[in-house]
Length: 164
Image 1 (cartoon, rainbow, N blue to C red):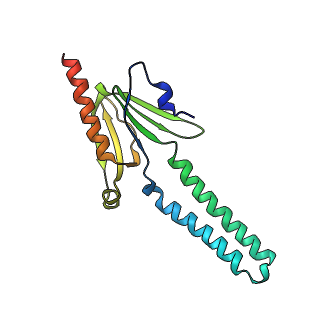
Image 2: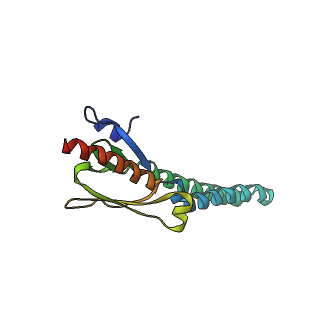
Image 3: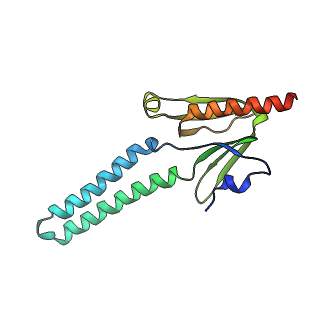
């Protein structure tokens, strides 16, 4: 299954950089989900005489762990920011899709905010500021400085073509 961005590329347009939400952004969800799964296994194994109550509690803990892990994956997977040689495209949502596109000629700046943890694990919040408006910030994007570097390189190429 191809992504939304792959299906809307214009003739001659190519993807320069594709960014996703960092796994570190959902570390707490992964940890909590894993702890629920571990608690489910421990409850099932340690349940005295494998009573119906311990099996039920283990099943509930297991289901909660799966829901927490699945929700983190579903929140992370469909969110992406794509830089092409002509525009920036952001998409969010699995069932209901929210898509915003901005031509590179309209981009004024790219703001990157990184916390201490973001700097350590190379993720941050990215806001694209354009003429007249700005895109809603994308939170927890992996390798945001690489995105900024690629945007600068592509913008120089677009500016050189416009001047010629």
